[in-house]
Length: 263
Picture (cartoon, rainbow, N blue to C red):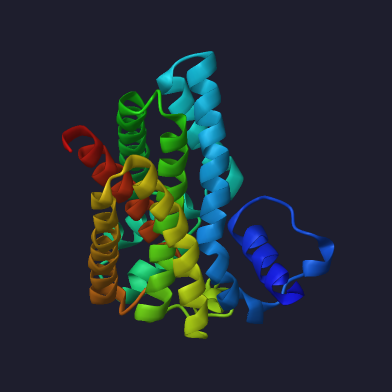
């Protein structure tokens, strides 16, 4: 039990800015196992973002609630996944060889592709969340579960990439290298359980079995991204995992917005 708590707090301190107990420390050998709790981190991030969404809607209006929700996730995670998305935009946008792409992604400076990519990403996220909130503004439990599922399922897709594709940046300064060490399949199954529980709750709450289709759709998005990454650099990096999370989160919002409007 203590070992599992250690793994959870390891995930918490690596993927968020939330504090962890001092006794947890840092052990690279725990990093891959800790990914089993990455979808659970999605529960936390989604829950907190939904609180700010509700506060914004109640106190001011829907648009303010959506922006507050987005700000809360960025502050909570330290823009961890958005940073990966931005680096990937710069790398794959500006590089034409594996070596150049990896070099650009490692550069801390932000280029045009990253700026444009983040503007489009955050703009689309705002638009989709705004649309979903307008459709379900009187159904707060549904909105809460929608946000939790978006953050949980998108993180689960990033976990599946660790097990389905190869990591390519094996340098001493790679932050994601310990995460990418493929471990026991139990880690994947535990992550799957944490991903499926909130989705099941949302399906039952909405009485909408079509929501189960979001799983293969998100997995298809992940596989398309992985295929693109593999074509250019032979696998994935930590920035690619962040990109996968962000794109799959958008994909879930898009799918559910269409589903809620037309079905």
